Image (tube, rainbow, N blue to C red; front, side, top):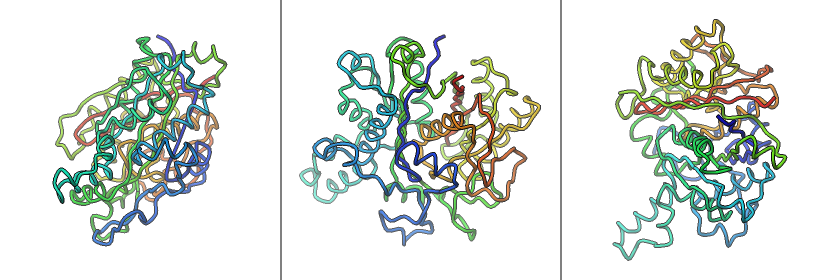
Length: 406
């Protein structure tokens, strides 16, 4: 099989706009989590969120291009501009038909969808703003990325809860392996909106759920729920031969992916972690890599009791086969928890490989589980192989294995 490599990274996040700003925050322990400013949270028990505050679409594209885009689409398009620039990959006329776009988003433009339907409910059909409707569908960000760059290849959107971005990365890999594209802009995006915040608060999954201090604490004994975030990440994926042919720099490769499903309730995670463990084993088996060769696991842990416990159980099983502890960290303490976080987490893996430094798990002070946690400070260690865990409530699991460029 052909090697699928990453040649460009574009990041718009709460802890940094741009790849290097984002990475600097990851290593310095600077979190994007702070009191929410975009909407009023006084009626709720939770007040924190990882909002993007330094983003201005005018810095990336003309106003005539972005004025009809939703905020989610603006984030995705801006990240795609950054990724293509980083990859030194202009979308020329010959490349347009052989380049694809695959985006994962949990909920798409929740703010614009809410505005559209509230207008219709208040004043009837004539009260609905027709200019809002095109961006109410989840595939709008992928469509806007294609329209902006003139891309004419495959265009696909995945909306699969917390593994939306992981599914997008896996599908982009398949497009390239099956010769359906020569390059793919693949990534994930979601926004933090008042309606989304209200929905998560209503089902009582936000921190705090009790008297403990509000915050994001993956794997910590005192964890008590999620802190929502937002962001966009786009990667440029190509076959190695295509990348070399145009003299591109290569961050690393997406070596393999695997997916499993667990039979659990819609708001729950797998208690015994059997399918979580299986997906981690399956992706290593596909890549012909042993657990002992894995240098880093980027955890899906999101400060909830169920997921963190189950994922820790799965990682311990893989670690037992490796006969050594495997370094583990979760980026959720930096960027918050949102369904479209996978591409940002994948970017952090690739930058860890580049620099030989694993970012710490912010908010983790008193570990509950016997894992090799990266805490407090970045860990300097060569990273050759790294696992990206994607686990969603409802039982969907996706594993992605990345390999360093040598």
